[in-house]
Amino acid sequence: VHSAPMAAGTGEDQVTSVYAFVSQHQGKIRRGVTVTRQLAQEWHDELGPLHGQDTPLLDDLRGMMLACQSFGYKVAICTSDDRPATEAAMKFWNIHDVVDVSICGNEVSHGKPSAVPLQVLCQLASKHCGGGGSILPQDCIHVGDTTADTGMARNANAGFCVGVLSGSGTSEQLLETGAHLILPHVGHIPTLLQSFEKLGAAQQEPQ
Image (tube, rainbow, N blue to C red):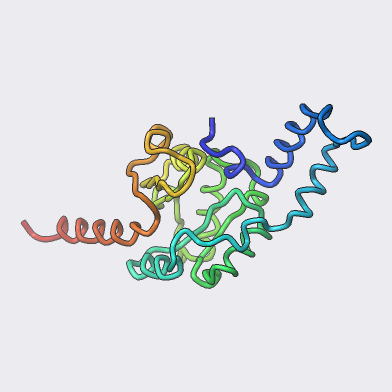
């Protein structure tokens, strides 16, 4: 069971869930209104990019991403949201030019926790950021806050998976589904990367 079935689902999944729920309670809906899946889709479309103007999880989300890039990492987004909502959020948060590559739920054949989104993201990263080489899931540090995120990382054999407690997943849920490490929120990621850099340098020093 996902820790956040609506948040982890694509737009298509959300419409399906709403339609299933409303259909089950059809008798309690105003008389004369017959809910069809098409009507549920129209409701969803009218809502638009609901989270396009949400407050970011960090006051300086852009600075955090730039800090990650300063260590030589590429910044990527792998989301279950559709492309319009994702573009709206990146623009509102002023991170559009900082994100090296992104993939959305309506652009893949199977959503999280399938390995497909991360695999497709790596293919895009190889094409746009790889410098002629291939980028594989094993090369990635994946950060997620739901069991769909950590499950995808596990299924794709991501190199390292960080669970963060800024979403719906608990420490236990995230660890059980693939996280190697739990952090309070994404603001700790640059410090983690700095630790990796120090560890790598120490291993290269002559004994």
